[in-house]
Length: 87
Image (cartoon, rainbow, N blue to C red; front, side, top):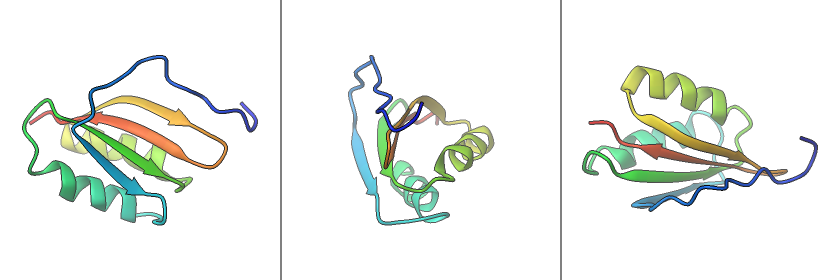
């Protein structure tokens, strides 16, 4: 993949954006957990982060919580993830 931007070909209707660019583990997951709790089922959250561990953390978190990872877009300096609230 190198330094090229991996862009999603899908567009999502995003209900909430979380900019966790300045946070490292566990900050982005904690922000996501707190932020998604008051949204209705089916809502989509976009998380922007520079945390290199976020993708693996997100996979573990979604397995535990049941929320669905719609997409993970990796760029040269950031990761953008789209998550749908399950319950």
